[in-house]
Amino acid sequence: MWTLKSLTVSEKDAETIVHKWFENQTDAVQTAFLARMKFLVGLPGNGWDRPYVGQLHGQCKGLFEIILEADNVQHRPIGYFSAKEEFTFLLFATEKDDEFRPKNTCKLAQLAKQIASTCEERVREINIEC
Image (cartoon, rainbow, N blue to C red; front, side):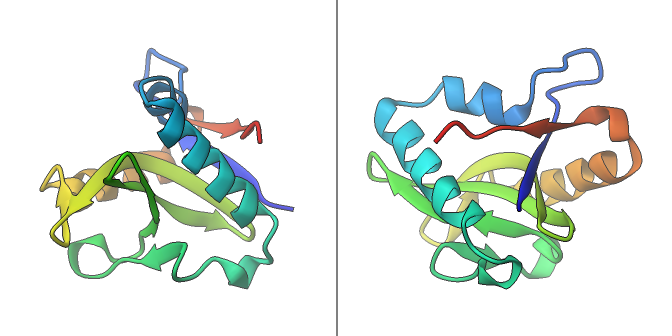
């Protein structure tokens, strides 16, 4: 059974980045995200692959993107497999013309991964209400 985790917004704020991002999205984006996550958590560990999940390369090596589109925008929740059947969300980006927005998404995500890996108090288990 999959465990989903999220980095918190800050040291002082226990709110997760998933919750913060989700509450600021349209109904269509929220629905697409929940549907994709419901589908993914039902798959075995080796089932998270294209076309729903992409392994990133270059500056983003070791990171993965959840691939979803809603409201004519390519949304890209970015995270990593933090343990067996455990995925930790690090940040949310969009993609346009094969480039992440913001442009420094990989750098930010790698910094977030360092924080998540070394500061357990900055990571919370999350429930995706599907």
